[in-house]
Amino acid sequence: MDKDIRRTVISDIFADPAKYVGKTVDVKGWVRTRRGNKNVQFVALNDGSTIKNLQIVFDLQQFSEEELRPITTGSSIHVQGLLIESQGKGQSVEVQAQSLEIYGTAPVESYPLQKKGHSMEFLRDIAHLRPRTNTFSAVLRIRHALAFAIHKFFNDKGFYYFHTPLITASDAEGAGAQFQVTTLNLEELPKTEDGKIDYSQDFFGKMASLTVSGQLEGELGATALGAIYTFGPTFRAENSNTPRHLSEFWMIEPEMAFYEIEDNMDLAEEFIKFCINYALEHCADDIAFLAEHFDKELPERLKFVVENDFVRLPYTEGIKILEESGKKFEFPVYWGVDLASEHERYLVEEHFHKPVILTDYPKEIKAFYMKQNDDGKTVRAMDVLFPKIGEIIGGSQREENYDKLKNRIDELGLTGMDWYLDTRRFGTVPHSGFGLGFERLLLFVSGMQNIRDVIPFPRYPKNCEF
Ligand code: ATP
Ligand code: MG
Image (cartoon, rainbow, N blue to C red; front, top):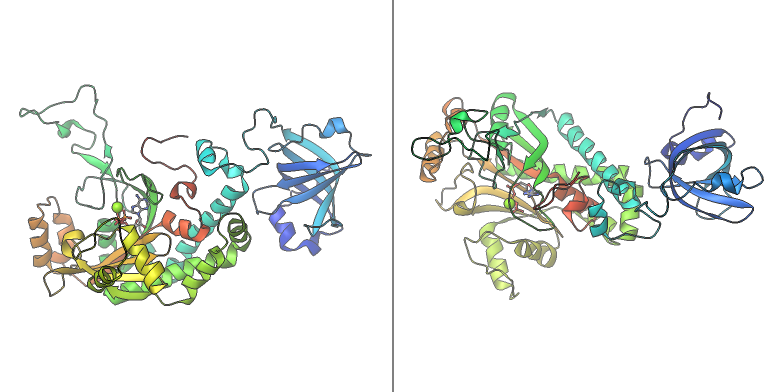
């Protein structure tokens, strides 16, 4: 090995092969496959920087079979060699190996990831190794690109990244069941005189939980900084064993002062189109790989969302369309029902053939903070519904009127909300916001079927491995 040659990242080679042809490159990575004959052996090498493997050619006049034997699927190697234009089909360039260092072997008998395709279920059981597969490396690169795109979008628009707490004592977030945070000895819980658990002895001196949404605190930021967004982990102890729910997921929650519901819808639409465009532009190879192996229509579906205006429709009209559809749904449709994903998908996939933003939902099925309409029955909510996913964004204009908000809080018997009500008590302004589930966006962009396959270490009921 020539110590003076620096490592070449494989994606850099494929980005501009001409720059490297005729030069010595130094590549390090994991072996995907090895094949060949008595004269020559071909190794497909991947270093995680791209879905594309670099072909390494070993001439058996220079390397002995003995030397190459440890090179099996999953082993890690370091190669220096000459980059040349490839004679074979399927790749533009290849490396003629000059020296080889083996970092680590991966014995065929015990390495779980072999060349043949594995089921998603099997890979979930070995989630600690699945980033080494083509599929998961593609998904994880897209995940990174989208996280970056989200920060870019908001930063370019002058939004501030605002950090809301993960541990919260507010039980009124209302978005889902919470995980409790405690240091009390569960075997021997301290009790008060009337037999209840004495939380004054708990770590925070009161009951605390993991956040189900950063929105309420986000509003405090927006009504001071103008426009903020949060982007962080969110926890919901809902026993939803669906392909769209995780117990730990990441949420993006922009919150904007002086935004009415129309501005909110414009932002949501622009935001999601920006993200998808960003992925199409920066993750073309990974999207093409996932399309080829899982979902042929993926590129079309992505372009379709970017190129079409979203339909904007009041809930009441949505219900009418569903009732008149003549379609047999599993769950009944009537005014006041919380739409199930089959209803949402009917509107998007069968009726409009476009993403739909449904607005003005019945107040009973929506959160207490949403702005009340004059009809006394509906609130200024907006859910963005997507093909294959159903709800991808949930948001609303917030109630800025102190009395109306206070009444609703009292009606629902919520307590401990004084800090939140202060935003309406002092210098209240119209404002709006929404929440996008990061993994729902990733499901859509990657074409994967199950939300457990778009996060490195999924948490769901009865599963908390690694
Ligand atoms: P759903 O009806 O699908 O459970 P929700 O109404 O509970 O969604 P919100 O409280 O509005 O959702 O949360 C905002 C966004 O967070 C949703 O639009 C969705 O993208 C995402 N989301 C909600 N719950 C989960 C979950 N358990 N796992 C992953 N993403 C989620
Ligand atoms: Mg929910």
